[in-house]
Image (tube, rainbow, N blue to C red; front, side, top):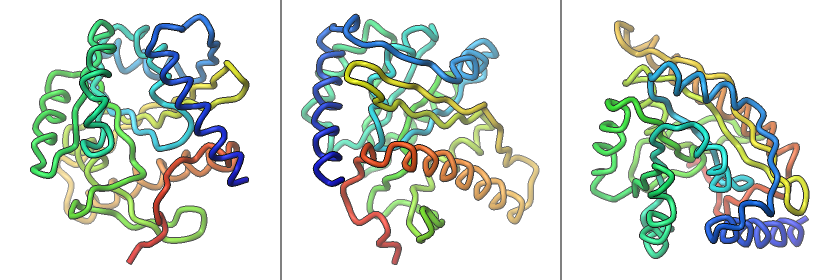
Length: 230
């Protein structure tokens, strides 16, 4: 299983580079839940797409181009510093903006501005930056930490949230999943109800992530001590 995980990870990286190089016709896709994302764009509410280090979400740019709206992809500065400019050059014609997560939290202002402009923001919800706010929850029957930022931002701006994943199924075929958008309002709620809404959003995310990890057990690429909760 470890060998298969590394082997598929290598395939995913090559697929990603092939897509960025323009070999789109080599791949085929199933888009399950595309109507949910179109609902967000047609209603012009803006929205948050939360994914994870599973499958190959970047390859879903094939779908993002079809949505005809501005997309903001949030990524860790340390992980993507060397390729950010390259990705920005590739994505610029597709109306996609790269937002880097920085230690000074300046990325929060960029994300907030995107929400205020009714744009879509894509972010992973299964890895946090040291020192940032986290939420503890059970994942695969053991407690782990999840980043609190995406969930609090979505609730603060009262925007719809969809959980999205792009999974490799065959050599040149991917299956894209998007859950129905939900709102998790914080306005006019007391602290207890606000935290309950945040917890509901997190639990829904974990449920969707667990389903995909169980269905594609060799495609979760989160290589660190995930369950080191304390």
